[in-house]
Length: 487
Image 1 (cartoon, rainbow, N blue to C red):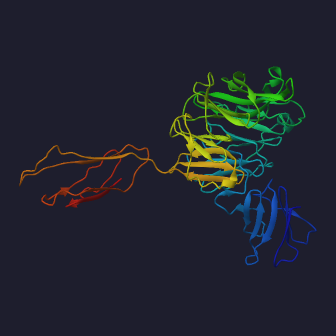
Image 2: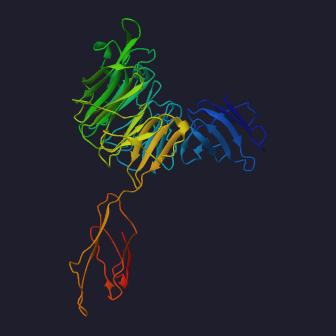
């Protein structure tokens, strides 16, 4: 029991907060009922009734502040904050079909979804009996289908995250992967085919580390890559899918092995599958890795663009492949660490890097600079995940140990204006026509750009406007000096 709340007017009515829900009693604790819709699997730390409005109950939880409008009697609790504070966010995933929708998952508090570009983050927890989420993946050919992994659990959603259920025929079958699945990747062409990577960092019932595959939507699983046959042992740290090439990737940390003279020698490998996860081949191997702070991602803006990072002697190492992992180029991030990478699908070559702050490269990682105006408090430290939504405005989201922080990118447009009549003189009494041309090469639209022109006072001028290419303006701005707004 974590918390206790007494009703201010109804004697004998009280709430009890647990790890994983709320209980309610109306007879002084003799009998109890579960009223945990919206708080399943969440640690409830404090409960209170509103003394000025006894029909309102409040719960302080690991998923933020929640409220019940029916004294908790209906069992429905909803979030009361627009952002996502006080939640440890380990992963972000932008929706492949909806530019305003993005998912965040937490190893403590479940899955949250924003449908307004990060303005609000309601939880999408219905059916999640375990909220210790370790991986999340979307079927890009069927965006309403999602997979999420928890401790010895797997959940699927066929309605974009509104509800979840376990597809497993035998929970121990998936549990054989071990209690920590650190990566999920869905075959870009076949939404029922999904691969899972196991970290191998704890004891398991059976099976072990490696890559497992299901071709029936997660009901049944088979091991398709056993690292023990190629390496002494290895732990999957990430998985990724490239929709542009229908390839899957997996990153593995090789378990430390003693070396002569003391110490350990640790390595990492990147594997690739071109047949939906049935077979895997090595495309990168390094033997100079000293931590497990590693990552693997695919850039959605460029076909065959794969990125991986790890650390060596405490310094970050960043590698990029532009040809499906066939060859790799080292890059110099110029930062103390790398915790995450993110990509701007609307601007190929733009890469974001998360460490203690956010850094950006606009030339595919050749050079980096601090990304200013993010507003991240200095104390946040690790930026655990980065993702972008491509709505208007384009927004960069960062997952941290204290929630999600979002930054709306300033609109980018390319305006030009010219005036040329080809004449240097005006004959008195004659008519001269000249044209001002205003163009916007984008990519963002511009509304209300002010266009002005002040001809010499000896000229009597009258103006008209014609719009093309989706623009608009005042058809008859009138006589005298020009002052008109254009879109």
